[in-house]
Amino acid sequence: MDNLTLGDTFLLAGLSGVRELQVPHAVLFLAAYLAALLGNLLIGTLTTWDPQLRSPMYFFLRLLSSLDLGLISITVPKSIANSLRNRDGISFLGRVSQVFFFFLLATTEVALLTVMSYDRYVAICHPLRYEVVTGPVASVQVAASSWLSGALNAILRTAATFSVPMMPSGERRSKAFSTCLPHLVVVTLFFSSGLRNKDVKMALRRLRLGRGGLSS
Image: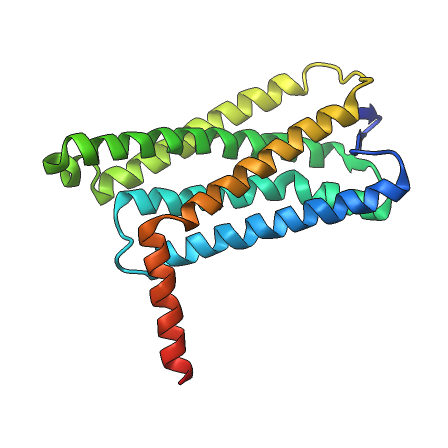
């Protein structure tokens, strides 16, 4: 979302200034948000609960689901709430927090995606060394390094962002739409592809069978 500043308050530009369109937009984004939320929670639950999903790849997949949950929760709920209440304000501290956590989680996610690519490379090209290169200790160290790089980048980016005066823009709403919608699409594609994973589908089937056995 683009924004305007007014003293210590930021005015967030919504997707539409027409009240009749704000509610449908809020409902649309709420549906996409809930779908992404439930999908990522399901992936996180399966990769934590199922003992057969203990490889480094699923450890990183669980972290990636957590990052996506955080990313979509930084700005989307605030946007939905503003549309439903017909408001467009956010405090300066709230906006700084949004920017910081967005850069933190986004940078960490990019680092983890790179690590997951390397994990697949080692598993396919060097299977005999896979357990040595990507063991539990190495996975935790890499995850910690990813978070550290994300934190450093977030500090630098946030400081740079708010050191420049915020100026009005005639294309605020189009920019807001082009920023929010693609991210929701990416998150949706991520959890849908994760749920199509063969091992994850088998874990989901085992979870259903286990609950069925308990209920009977």
